[in-house]
Image (tube, rainbow, N blue to C red; front, side, top):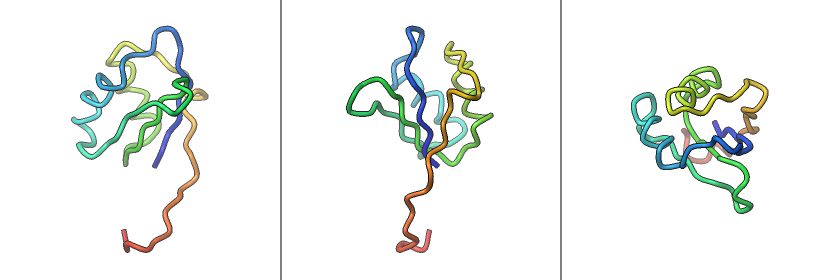
Length: 79
C-alpha cells in the first residue's frame, strides 16, 4: 500500500522514517514527491501502525493526514 502524508514543520527526514519502518516492514520505501511537500510511504503496514511509527520518530500526525492511495497493482507479477 502507498500512503501520502502532507509535510508539516515538525516532519522528520525521510531517511529517519525509513529506518524506523525497518522494524515493522524491512521492504518499506519512504521518499518525498516531486513537490517536496508530501512524504510517500510504500509498505505492507496498516495506517494505524504507520501513525505509531511516525509518533516514535517525533512526528505526531492525525489519522486524517495519512491518505492511503488506491492500489496500482496490475497483478502481472502474481504478487
